Length: 231
Image 1: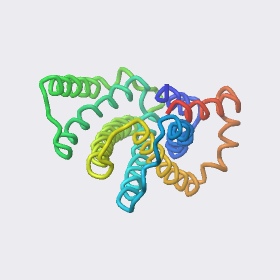
Image 2: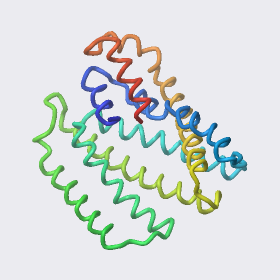
Image 3: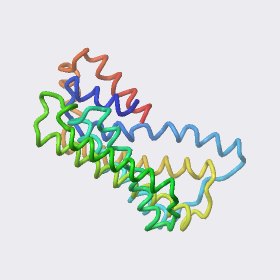
């Protein structure tokens, strides 16, 4: 749903890549609202923060914001179906980074999936003219393709680094600890993308962008609101 909403935003007149990156992490209070009652229901306490853990959350948040920005460029120039297929290469990168950083095992099923996804990525590249929007130039299509692959690579790295945080710093993996990491990483990603939107003057431009949006202001804000919820 989030990929379709991103494409819907750009195809109907939206222009800001930073804004879509911000939308992707603006929903960080949602898991926080689930996390707070979890402490009472499970009878557990919040995980104590230390310098290493905070730094890891900041780094992961920055990488998440950068990753969202890469995907925003991809969805600005590629159809949602093509962008989503290319984004599936995250399995390839998460397997590779998991093997290199976390020492996860590579089995036949994973290798088979990597080969199939890589072959699909090559086919999409060779048949690029069949799914390109008429107003997208060659350079924009190539840029979208490259940013999508880079975003998937960074996403795979984030998965591996998150697993390292569980192994090295948290030493456990439970429901509330996973939620804590999600909330903290999304919060720092939100801070990073908010700074980007402010620097790019995207927030003041929302009103004029909403007026130009196909379907009107209500459609514009509905797309962004559901984007926050579904990301």
